Length: 238
Ligand SMILES: Nc1ncnc2c1ncn2[C@@H]1O[C@H](COP(=O)(O)OP(=O)(O)OP(=O)(O)O)[C@@H](O)[C@H]1O
Image 1: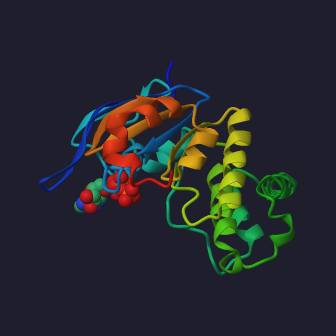
Image 2: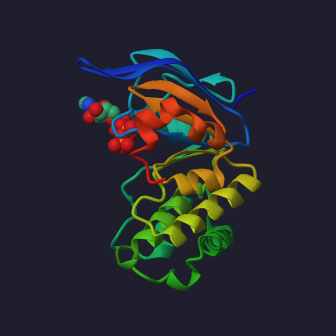
Image 3: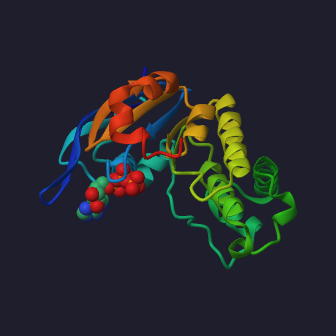
């Protein structure tokens, strides 16, 4: 069974048809990248999956259950998690306190401490744990937010441009984090413009264009597709 299935999903804002009959299936355990030109409707698709927007028509299935009308919190409860583009960390609080906030709905006491330790280690932020989040580097802020997004061990992690503004080294380290999460069983759907990252992690790639699935395949198939090059890859950070 697929973990996520979008069926004929449509969303329009007034006269603007932003999501136009999208069909997309994610297999459990895959890393799937969503690419496409600016304004193609990628972030809108994430907001539909999370339940921040509701589709005009179409269905969203998660682990076989139709979640189209569920509120966001109910989707999160079922194992969905999203890291949006703009870092949403609490800048005035320490790294440790940020992780504590993300974890405290499910963990207390010794268990909470152990989970914070596990995340600090995973993120490579142990020596920054007392640091105010606002003082972290851009890359570290993104990692802290990934840590918050994975704190409750979601089954599906959605990442909206996780490497935006990162150096090539930071981008590569982010790719390694995603691969480690995936090795532990997490399914990942990532919106990315950075083709080095896509090449590093993606098992399958979907190209979105004008709110529609324009192409799908392995990274090599997508790069070799002249139609994709014409609408997008010329502009991407290849
Ligand atoms: N709440 C909204 N109200 C009206 N229009 C919107 C809204 N959200 C998005 N749009 C429009 O929908 C289109 C798709 O936007 P979206 O952010 O989903 O694209 P994107 O593929 O994520 O682009 P980018 O790569 O630049 O992040 C854009 O034209 C945008 O202006």
